[in-house]
Amino acid sequence: MRNERAAGAPPPRPASLAEWREAADGSAGSVTFTHAEGDHVVVVHRWRKPGATTVVLVHGIGMGQQYFGLLRAELADAFDVVALDLPGFGESPEPAESLPMAALADLVAAALEAHVPMPCIAVGHSMGTQVVAELAVRHPALVERLVLIAPTVNPRERSGWKQALRLLQDLSNDPLIVAAVGARLYLQAGPRWYLRKLRTMLEHDIRPLLPRIAQPTLVIRGEDDRVAPRGWVEQVAALLPDGQLRTAKGKGHEAMITGAEPVSRMIEEFAR
Image (cartoon, rainbow, N blue to C red; front, side, top):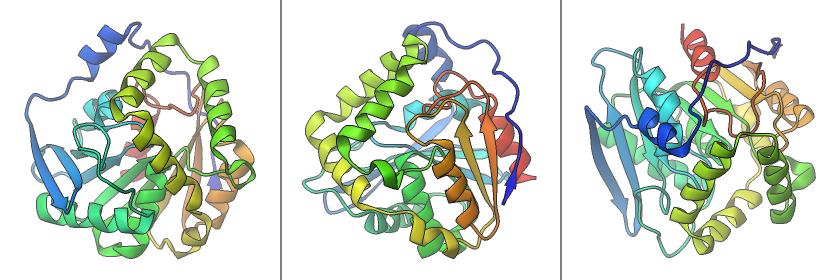
C-alpha cells in the first residue's frame, strides 16, 4: 500500500442547489438503458466517448447517478463514462426485497455486459464500494482497475444509528448545498427502501474481499470524513494486494458532491 499527502484545496463550487443542478446536468449526449431481472432494475446512463476507457460510477445508499453529476462531467473529457441507478434509487423503481451485495454485483455485471464496453475502471462511493468490490472479485474480467471512495462499513460502528450519527456530524462541516442535495435524493428513495438497503449494507463485510482483489486499486478518503475514519480506510488499503491510498483535502464523506476536484484528477492519474 502506498500513502500520499492530501491533495490541494478544491476550486470554487456551486453555491446553491439550483446552481448545482445546472452544473451537474450532463444529460445532453447521454443514452440510457434499463436492465431488469424480475423486479430488480439497473438503469444505465452512458456518456459515450468512442475508443476511450470506460469508467463506471456506482453510487452509495440513498443516492442515484445524479449525485455524481460534477465528477461525471469532468471525467467525460477523458473517459467513456457510465453512471448507474441501482434498484430503488434514482430512476430505478423500488423492488420488493433488497438483494445481498454479491447478488447486486451480479446484476450490475449483467447490465454492464449487455450495454457497456468492458473492461472498465469501476468507481464506487460509500455503499457503492461494497458493490464494486464484489464485482471485481466475482467478475474480474469486467474490471481492470478499481476506485474505492469513502469505503464502508467501519466495523467499529456497524449499526444504523452510529452510521446516521457520523453522517450528520460529517454534514455539519459541509456547505448547506451538500445537505440540500442529499436530502433531495434521500427523499426520492424513500425511508422504507433506505432502511431495507441499510440493513443489507450493514450485514455486508468488505474486508474478506479485499485480499482477493487482484486489480490495482485506488482508495480515496476525504480528509474530514467522519463516516469512513482514517484508521478504517488505512486498514482497507492495507488489505489490498495492489492498493494505494490518497486523501482529498477539505472533503468529507460526500467527497464529490460540491465539485469534481481533486477526486477527478486522482482518478485520471490512476488510470494512466
